[in-house]
Length: 495
Image 1 (cartoon, one colour):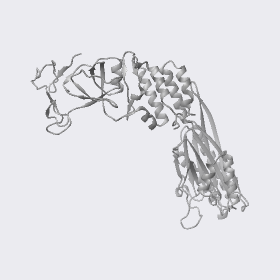
Image 2 (image 1 turned 180 degrees about the vertical axis):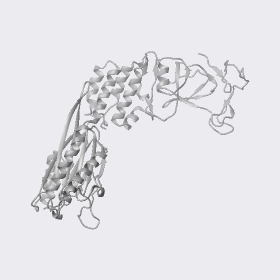
Image 3 (image 1 turned 30 degrees about the horizontal axis):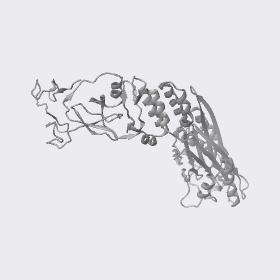
Image 4 (image 1 turned 135 degrees about the vertical axis):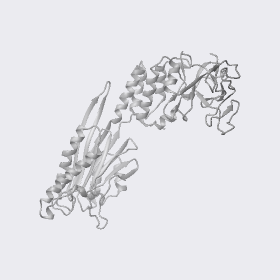
């Protein structure tokens, strides 16, 4: 279809050979600068009044060959890595046709116009963001975002009847995850059905060798017949992102110099299986708490056991009934426990009969993990070759080894509860809760070496206690170790 001239002033359509608008007489070799609004000649590169660039540039989706532009409105600027054209005459226009291909570009990308080339009419798209190759995008997205990107893409492709350009090396994506792909209404040597193209794309995109993605790809490529089947598989994969495996073990010893053990710890876990159409999701919930009865209080052993039992009673209700962690509920629980222990203390006349204890805890609900603590019992996170304490130790600045905060010794308005959600940077890490009978005689570096060494979680806890007991620790010694591993949906391919 031949282009016609649209008058920039009155919007009247004029024959393509016109020099002036038939209605208002406006010079059709000029137009209005988008920045300052003054009239500039189409042949000029910059506005003579404000200096703004007058030529707009657009992109054509990748093509098997560099298109030869026949259209007088545009000229080719670059063909690598993307095909960029420049608008030579913005006054030239034509009506866009309605078909599945143009609807795809209008709804999913920023379709500006079409351009006539030797190989046919091609879409002209607005460039609003930087484009990046598919492989670069794949390396930047996390696993869930990768799956959602593919689901959005395949959901869009299933809505029309068209064929997709099959050169994945020329597949570019915008920063907002819009795919700059080329479509045709008919198949050819370079354009194939969306389902075939989707299978090639899935084959091309790689992940970690033992990931769910790599394990299930062969079956999906072999058995699926429609985009809907692939989309359902991607949804099932995404559901697994909340699946984690946790190995855990705890051990406590009164130590060589103490007659009783004032440390207590708690391990409570709950497993459930959620069924989907073709798969099952194993969900894990767990509560892990350590309490060190305050030294110098004769009721330290009773206090730590009471604190543990009360926390279990209150937090297990949240753990079983909720699917997300609520940090405020954790804080509320510790305040309730503190009030109960504090109330019992106010009934006792003798100071030596009063109870108190530290708290170091971890709550896991599916893929969310929270930590909380009061007092000086630390919680460590070991990730790769790095160990860091994520808890906050409440110790006196004036008296060595004196605890400044504990559960039960003050009203709740006077204690601070430290808490937070754990953000993991790698798919596998460890969490260690320990009493000071361990940390007083075993350094962080030694803890790191033992935890990352070969062996089971149980064997590592045993070794930690053996080292502490071998060094004649003066206090009770307790260690509670968790190994957390998230399900590897896609992961990073090996080098």
